[in-house]
Image 1 (cartoon, rainbow over the protein chains, first blue to last red):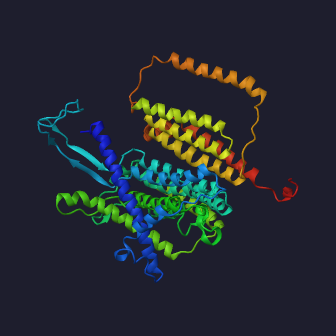
Image 2 (image 1 turned 90 degrees about the vertical axis):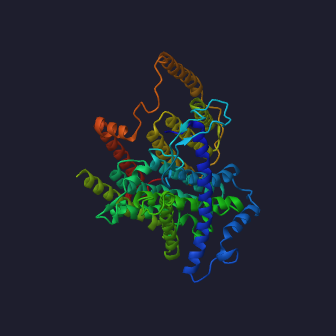
Image 3 (image 1 turned 135 degrees about the horizontal axis):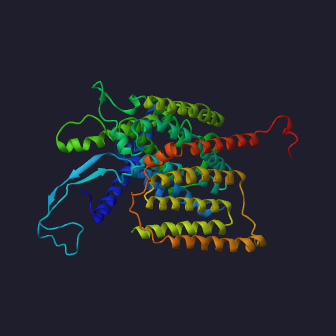
Length: 369
Length: 170
């Protein structure tokens, strides 16, 4: 039974608010996790002073960002200088809207008591009637081109970085912006092609359908995830291209401290800088979500316990898998040095792209045969 | 609701197009063009063509316009000089635009008797488009790809300077 329009809008608003709240909290604590883990890797403690284990550090950082002086240098192109961090953050946050976090949540049917004071005409019969059952997916919106929408929105994300670099009117920022846009455009091709193999196997753009296709097991114990289903090369191409897309080490040339001060956000301070920071970590989480959905079976995992636990376990498995990805990100950051720019470009075009095409052709032949 | 969204995206589209011409800075013009592309994608979504909308955003707004912005940044193009416009543009352009507008208006009004179609009735699903591209119109599709390949090769030839004549250029 589909939801009536007014309730649908209400549910969508509530879901958006919850997802946004959880996402921004996750972003704040990813920063904390990164500082803590990298600290321990380098034989330091990381944040310890604010709260137990430094757990309140993100809140302190947020307050600091809000109250710092927001400097706008006199030589910038002001409209774009202000718009660029907003664009970066908005595009980063938008892509989360099509990601499914778990199965549907079904409730009802309800019988509505007679005394409810609804006088205006409702789209369904109140009072003594039975409504439902309704099924609400753990997802803001389920579009049948979900994956393409994520790719489209993330491909728009490059504007925030590029325009920040250009509008700052500063050579380091401009170089950072140019590097970022060239890098993101180059690696986007390998990224897109690495996902096509999965699409061929599951035969749908819908993220929910892709995850559903990965249910079950091989020989009763190996989960039927795409990474165990011939797509491990595709997964590694995706992983490397995604690191480049999010400008993370070893591909963080756009903000290389040793050469470009801070790259595209050199001139930014206070909340505008924080917006770039949040956009970067949101993109990391989105990349982790897509990897989990496409290669690691999404919310599939062992289910047990009472019905309520069974309803919530998929969301837990999904979150746990994303946590593993974020940890991997941080681990790589603590381990690898930075590439040189020509190495970055030749790696993307001469190694990753041919490998992605080969993987695509091999998968196509395998599926057709 | 539908009409409101249609008008909103249409207004963004037309406003962006006018802004593109009015702005003097190349980068603001490029950004207006991106707004036009994004608004067009919104209109496609309203028509139920989700796939076309996504491709519109990925290809035009996400790839082609990034290259535009990239080139403008690389050349660091400054503000344009304002000219009064050529006489040819006024003599031919304005009547041409009026004729085109009238022609489109006439065609639309002539066919306004056609019934409206509910969303989802027309093919717009990726499967339908794949059927068209890879089955019904396979030959034109593949010939187009050869055409694009030729364009790529031409770009490579133009971009690569031969060693011998490198000194003569200039």
